[in-house]
Amino acid sequence: MNRRKSKQVNKLSVDFVVEWLKSMLIEEEQKKVSSKNYHKYLPKDTHVYANKRYIVSAYTPRWFAKRIKKALRKKDINDITYSDVI
Image 1 (spheres, helix red, strand yellow):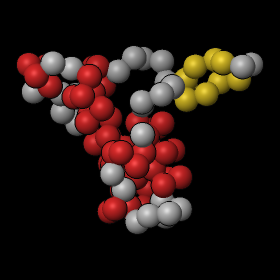
Image 2 (cartoon, one colour; image 1 turned 90 degrees about the vertical axis):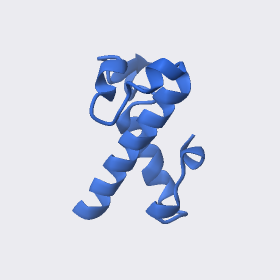
Image 3 (cartoon, rainbow, N blue to C red; image 1 turned 180 degrees about the vertical axis):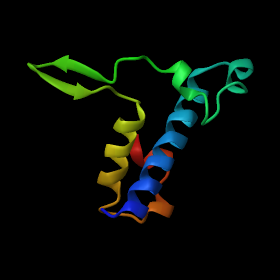
Image 4 (cartoon, rainbow, N blue to C red; image 1 turned 180 degrees about the horizontal axis):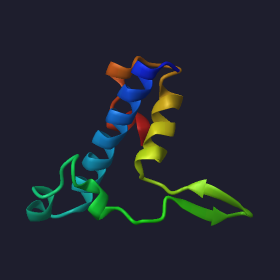
């Protein structure tokens, strides 16, 4: 994957994290969440120890990026939606 594509994947993963966070919060809190401050609402731990190995925590930017990369095999990056990744 080249640099341009990876930047697009990372930006899209942050957008999906913000969209997921907004779906979990009430309307008043939704207005406070943006792509610049979403880190405040996520846990500090990025990985989880399970089944004798470390795996990426669900619904983090890295988790979304992995899902987007899998979806890229079938679709173009501009056609990938939140529902394709979940």
